[in-house]
Length: 332
Image (tube, rainbow, N blue to C red; front, side, top):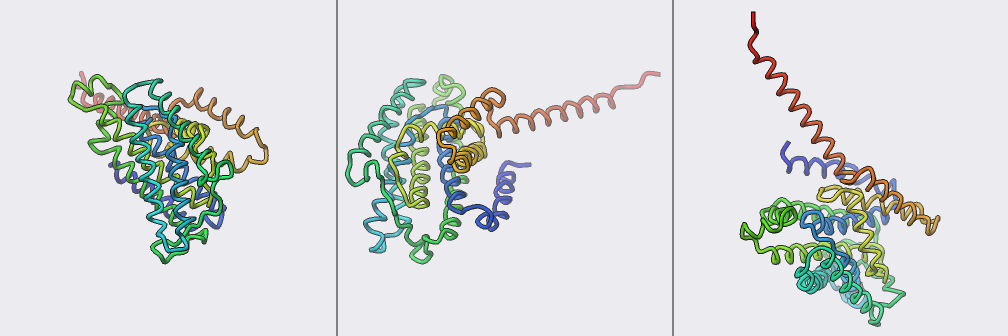
């Protein structure tokens, strides 16, 4: 079955179940899962398809939320469109991504990761010091505004459908990028950078564009999260947020379309339903990660796809053997 058809079918199943979700599960929880799923997809674009491990994505996630939050708090009563607030958050995240990426892509491996970590800590320090971010208290009571000036997003069900639409759009956009010629060049860079250089690819430019695209989609997730929870907290720009999205991506499966989504759903569910256990949640999440790394190195979706591929290979081999047997001449 062609890949586009599989993607459409995979999206059709949740679409059929969409109207049922708000009646079964708390809508804000589903929206939070969708926001972090988009965050993990954006991170997967960088680590899964480009081979770059960043510890600075919390800067994009948090500062986009701060940007959208301050615009809505200050200007929502004057009719400022929520769409422009989200776009502003994405632009700020992209600008920070350009700044961090320009400095970080000059190095590879652990050095690249450490540069992103150091620069993200600067972003965290600025979030603590600047008075308009709210410091440790963060921004609370962020207005959701009205979509297109008509739909009141303060109603959870309305916000739910808007968040779902943004997630689907982001998912399809990332899927298109990955399967475009640019996405193929990123995979070539990931698999064999020296060979990509010999083929004429400008690897530094490809890395920078991938970094900025990942930052833009992360900014979209951060802006949506700030509107969904009506809160932009200091925790959003902390290192733990970057490591959480790394965990989501690894649990679901690097370089897969639905792996980060499943990983985000698992981690957010553990944090939500086991919140009463306090710090034990971190231990359970860590044990889940250890089990996954030990027995499912490709992640949950990665292992499933590998099993399906082995099954197809076995069937193809069996069919080949059967055909060879039929063609074998019968000796009297």
